[in-house]
Length: 403
Image 1 (tube, rainbow, N blue to C red):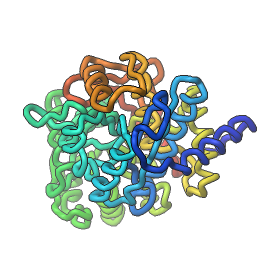
Image 2 (spheres, one colour; image 1 turned 60 degrees about the horizontal axis):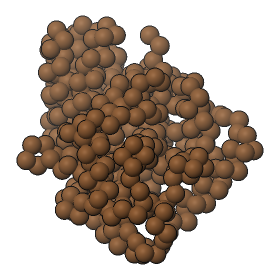
Image 3 (tube, rainbow, N blue to C red; image 1 turned 45 degrees about the horizontal axis):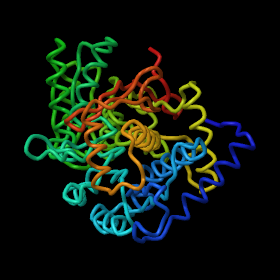
Image 4 (tube, rainbow, N blue to C red; image 1 turned 135 degrees about the vertical axis):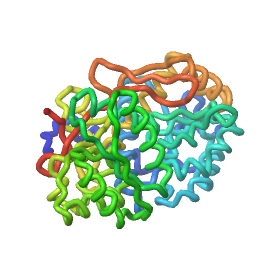
């Protein structure tokens, strides 16, 4: 979506991009004035996950720039690239810790989080991850990491939301699930979806496959076709989702498909131009962010994102859900600073205790990733609660689902 940029917006974005790319060197807390927060992030903005990490970097930098300009934040920030290799996150985290890290945004993915979160818990560093959705990130019961919170919906919450969406919008009475039985992400979402759909009065048809690349999804889809399913839920990662959609095209099976979390489902393929167009058009996506929304905040974010993407020669100039989640994460942290009277001269462990108690105590804020007029909130579990929205693919773009 093309956006006409004002000269002021362009100049502000140029300055922000330069600041965001010229990241501060590592050092001790004593290297910078005590009136500046040290906010760090671990994002895969090169490598195989660049399509989710680069937008997240832009989203975080846009938020920081806006907050600094508004006089709400003074910060030295360091957004470090793990180069799409999860195990690199450990080295990057210790670099940030030596630099004087006070609050961590990320790691972005659940796999990278697995390499650092035990250390953040023992170090008492507060973590708000924009996109790591696995239940293992926050933990539960005796394994609950009380310093870690998610801004994205957990895998199970996404499954439940998908079921509610189908029933509330009366999308189908003949629902099926094609899921990867060898992927915990897919299985967790499938189980939550199935349980919630039954609670809402519908009995889904389940069909499993085992190939991690989704190359044997055809048999599962054939089962659903033969059972008369006219809406198929695909709780799959990008590669498996695309493979399943291609299988459907090959077998001339044309139900309505619903994917969850557009970054993992189909959004990346749209950006790369390699989605199976015969089945992508009309595809339904459950998402927390609609880039074509016409509210003032989304329009301003779209404009700022486009400038950054162009200046950085990034291919996709339309903001993604990942970008919006990183943006919201920065705003949530700063609002919590303000609400809990957190100051930059506090030690990381003291900030962690205050912020953890604030989020666990029902902290809420508005953001790009919840509908206008609504808020997202947190509690002791570390999971976020917010309303998700239904989108569809129209003319190669993710846009609001109207009917």
